[in-house]
Image (cartoon, rainbow, N blue to C red; front, side, top):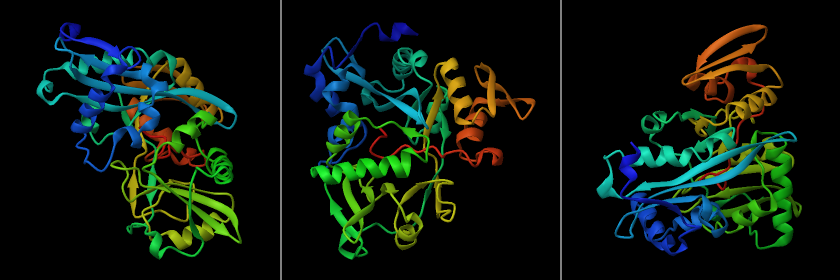
Length: 346
């Protein structure tokens, strides 16, 4: 199968930054971006120069970029323990070369560089049949609260526009994220550099939830072409239910089980998930389930594990969903929900 790549050079933007604009043009054409939005802004964490070593490209003999797959290395945090994971995005192949098996070989070759270093590989797509062939399965569960698109002109009086350009606001948002999301969910670590990358996603709007000049919460809305009209991250320092009651008409994404009072009108999955390193994945599951699940064996499409004194066996897809959702096992319903914010997803 690797013979399919013989006429192409597999490289990266770190080695060939001169192909950046061509790569961006290919991505935006493949994803049908309109002229008003820009992939390099919506997905700045993926496309910024510090990540160029993880922007894989295929170059043909005419020095043309014909495919791109981007990876972003992050960490999931469970209380104080972290696990390496990698996010995948910006996946595209030149239209004239699709259907020839090129993507399969290129994707599998790229994945080999990350599988043994990470507990999980995560990506976002509406092509479930395609990615299941590579061992990716729907995972996590998000509830959308309402149907209406938030409009600041008719917003409740406790909503104010915010900007991460303001240092005091930036510090408040980081603090609320830690209290309202990181301390309550299975989520990605946001270091100072990650927050600085989020600052550069200018296609996302920040709003603050205020009471007597005190910031009690915030939310991010929109993300250019990607999440238009959606409030894709909302967090509170306190009084979450009070504010959600007053915002529930809007399209707000909240993790399933985080606010049980709000079942939502639409249930969505969080991402596609693939097992990476077997040892790292075993350790993650053992920690995440508070030692309730111990994985005994991982095979190509099967996970054998011990739970409540018995030995069980599930398909990989079912195991992932039993633990993380959608359709999480009732016995695990008190675990922290999986949350990957819209500004983190690529």
